[in-house]
Each structure stands twice: as C-alpha cells, then as structure tokens.
Image 1 (cartoon, rainbow, N blue to C red):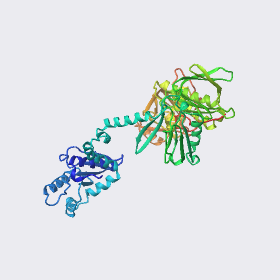
Image 2 (image 1 turned 60 degrees about the horizontal axis):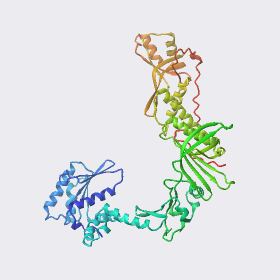
Image 3 (image 1 turned 90 degrees about the vertical axis):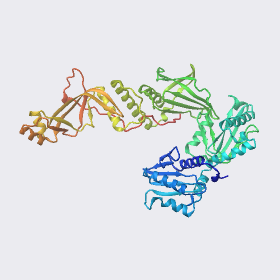
Image 4 (image 1 turned 30 degrees about the horizontal axis):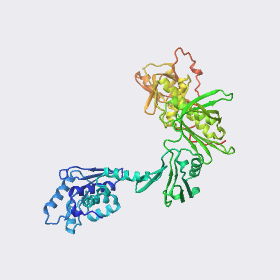
Length: 575
C-alpha cells in the first residue's frame, strides 16, 4: 500500500520528506531540519557535506502549481530568494505531484541562467522510488491510515494502535504462553533487524539434567575462522564460559533433540551459545598462592571465580584477578595435557595494581608451583606449564614490566599519580626511562638535547675563547625546575645538572667579532657537543663532590621497542 499523496496534510508531507532525507545521508553529513514553515528564512531542510550547502524547500502542492495558481508560484519564488541569502550550492524543491513541462520550466528558470545554486526538482515519482528503497518508512506512515481501519473493526490491540502499551500486552501474552510450554525450559524471543532471535533459557539450575536438550551441528568448521574449532573444543569439551557462534555459512545441518515442542529449523540459521548468567560459581572468592622451589610462599593473589565449567572432555576454571584472567582446562583423561590461558589488561590500573597483574602473569609464565583455594578450601595444586610460553612472551613481559616499574618510580618521585596509559609513544618511553635513571642517581645521556644557547655578558675568558675559536671546552649548566613531558602532563624531577666534556660554538666567529668590538653583551651563542655525544644529565645531590670528568652515562637499557602497555597477548601453553 503506497502513500496517497493527494490525501495527506502539509505537516505529514514534511515529516515524510524529513525522514527520507535523513536516510539519504551518512554520519559525516550535517542535516538540519528547520522549525516554523514559512517563517524559516527560505530553508526547510539544510544539508552540509564537505563544505557544500544544499537547501531543501518543501511545498505540499498535490495539484501542482500551473500558471493559474499564481499565488503558489509567487510563494516558490519568495522561498527561492530567501534561500539565496544563505548562499547555497544547491536548491531543491520537493513537491508531491508530477510536474508539467511548464511547471518544471518555471522552477528551473528561477536562477536566471546562473550556474550557482544548482536547481533541482524532486517530484512524486522520485518520492515513490526512494520510499520503495526504504520500505519501513513507507510502512510506518501508511500505518496511520490503517490505524483508522483497525478502529473501525475493533482490532486496535492487534494493530498496536495504542503504541508501546499494546506492545507490552501482546508480547507479555505471548511470553506467558511460551512459559507454559515446558516445566524446565522456556524461550526468550526478540525481533532484531528483521530477524527473529530465539534464546533457549533454563527455568532452574538443573534443567539440563532433568530435561536434557542435545544439539547436533554439522558444518564446514575447517573452512571457517581457524579459531572456531579450538573454541568448540573449549566450550563443548570443557564448558568454558565464553560465547560460541556458528555462522549460518558454516552450518550444513542443525538438529535438536529434546521436548516435542522444541522444533528448530536449521536452514540459514546462526547458532549462538552464550554463557549462563550468573555462571556456575560466579563471584566466589579464590586465592592463588605461588610457591618457590622450597615450598615457601612467594605471593598470594586474591580474586573471584568467573565460571566453573564441565564439558565432555573435562572441567574448566575461569578466574579473575586485578588486571589478570586465568582459564584452566583440565581433562578427565590423565593422558590429555592440562592447558592454561593467561591474559592481562592493564587499562585503567594504577602502577601498583598493574605490577601485581604482571606478577601473576610472570609466575604463570615461569611455570611456578601453585595452590588454589576456593572459599578458603584448597581446590587444586600443581605446576603451571611455563615451558610452553615462547621467548617472545618472556621478552614482551620484560619490556612491559620495566615500563610500569619506571612509571611507578617516576610517579612516586613527582608525586603525580595516574593510571597506566594504554599506549606510549617511543619518545615518551625513552624520556620515562631517562627520568627513572636520574632518580636512581645515574648520569644519563639525553638524545633530545642537541644544543644549548649561551648569552654573553661582554667579558672574555680563556674558556670562552676556547669555545669560540674551535678548541672546545667543558660545559655545565643548571636547570633548577626540570620536568619531563609525558603525554599531556609534565612530571617534575627537581634540579638537574647538564654537562658535556667538550662543546663548540657553532657561531663562534661572530661572537669573537662582537667581543673585539666591545659590544658582545647580550650576544647569544649556540653550543653543540664536539663529538656528537649527547649532553649528560644528572640530578642535584646535596653535598655532591663528583668529579665531572669521571661521569659516565648509564645506558638506557630498554629491551626493545614497544609502544603498547595493555599487556602481552593471550598465551595458551600445554603440559
């Protein structure tokens, strides 16, 4: 059923066109619908895209605007002139009729032959064509006509004439009927993007034991995502609490064995297995105790259970700690190796909490001996299969831990505390390392300082003469309030000494001339290291009598480039 353009009102026509225009443009386009027809300055809808402005003028003239309708033509002309005040690139007239050649010529002639703005007319044929592409819009507006018919036949509820209240009644009635189908199971139904989604829900924790339901899925798993086969093994084999999705493209056949009322057509169906909420054991307290080779406690980490699972091959433990998650899959068959998946996410953590998470990951990676307590009772004990972690895993962990340790020391020294950032630029990482070494009392070469500027006081000296003539001399400076930039922050370190054993003036000749002429005061000289080695930094130490000539820069010792700080990737070792 199409929209009857001859039998609607101007406001309804405006609503239809406004809704349609919103569908025509993407998120990068600004669409403004103006209020106040006739007094809006010649704009009904303004669209801005890439700097171009398009103005839509809506005129509800179902009979058109032939020459005999001079008032309508005059109104169109007034709207066009008003729109010109906004300097549009395009001006579009939208009408719900089929234009005659005379009417179209009138509109196209409004511009007087100029190229800008470009003039267009969108008529009934265009409206019908675009609404056909957006059937839900047309159906929504046609619904208003059907509403009257529904009232005539007393079918307001069936037609949802009462809006959301009627939806509540209809869906509630359907849900109560579904709940009466079975004592142990029910189905939750949702309508999403044109598809009916059915979710099988147990009515009590033992529904799968009292009234088991079996799914048989046959498909092309090898042709699907490589991780799907492993996910099936974890979920079906060990009952891990994760969502398992079989796309319709990989399913050849789906059969369900259970109550007689449960009939599922597997054709073009996506199967999605979700974790129970709450999952079995979820929220119970757990303690993970790491032991050394002598059996002494190295550390104790408190966390919670995310899920306790059971599958065809064995059982699973999904444990959550501050910034860390450990999943253990233990097979019933002793010959099948136990697998451990450990992952960390430092996003939003303080340095202290992040270091604890890194400890957890490190101990698992090392293959530490452990004891696991659930609600105060020992649940499991053994040794993590650390040998299965790769060399790359160890290197990533070492880089990440050093980064967080450096940040922790610098934060404490600067008394500026914030969460561990998810990403670090290489320059920020290097500056952070420099700051940590300075705080620890080391002398550090600063590659970011290529030169110093010195202002002369007008007096000559042997040292100054050596600098300006190219012989070179030692140079020392003091920065009383030094701070390192870190992201959008500055972290104060205190007084820093700058030193280099031999620097040269790059513009020494001009300075020598100024000294000879007696007007060198205020003259600026740029000093650069003679051998290309960066300036050396060290923090001020009260009573320090260090011989500057013996200061040797400490290497930064950053074990490889790394910009991320969220954590090592998931690792799944086996033993």
